[in-house]
Length: 409
Picture: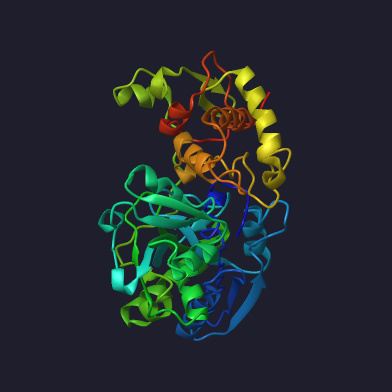
């Protein structure tokens, strides 16, 4: 799924499978919505079939294409529409295990599986963490995905950015790189298609935003169906069926797994900041102001954002649209891009911007240009201007939560 949210930086993650169940009463049919663009589509159908069998009922499959259109991708609002019209429960939705982000108006069951980004290496040189890779190793990553962030904490490694997961793993095949950090389902699908599963090894990454839980989404009105679904999943896990169905795309989560459907984390308020030992100001002393949708730090100047607007038009608009609403690349503004539930900071996004853009020549612009573009992005996401320009180093180090504060004034 390639919808317009912060998670768009995580494109492989966002190719979702929706599995719905209408099992609120005995003999009610299990209704399933499945994303045909997802590499886990067959796994999703198999789990749905197993749930229906466990319920001793029938299964109805509704296919949809989670990539959406070329302009804005798959809109999160579509989940609500499908859950109301085509299916009752929503399964196969990946949620960052370190946070909680769901489509607005939807709830989720307890996690029943875990997948995420993995470290892929040749079997002969298997490594199970970034710290065990030899110094100077070149590691392939897909354009605009979370693993681009990990090089900051592992400076001995070199980033090799590729436009797609397939291109990144192809570089590993051709021995142009020593390892790759990619979305597990995509890796599994690629290796199976090319009959290379025995030639490469992969291990879960223990890094921020690397592990994702698989949950079933549902409309609050369908709580009974959600409860019945969880009962079936527990039965499938108890008899060993669930683990077999998830393998190798994901692993099962134990029965103690907590629901990831908690309310999204709100941005820290001035009071919260003081309670934590702060003084009600953003990192680096940037004062905050109250906007209609919460607090926002003053991280840049108006003149800098104006320069950034021109730089964006020259280097970014072709892929992300003149108004940042997305085109071949994801949207770079709005509540889905700057989403508090995703738990990303300004520094996280700036790292991806400065390392991955422009797509034709990543990391090729001057540091000041990247800082100016980031100032423009902040302006378009409702952050107010201040009296100090944003520098490259300050942008990269910023721990200011990335939150959409409304349209720029």
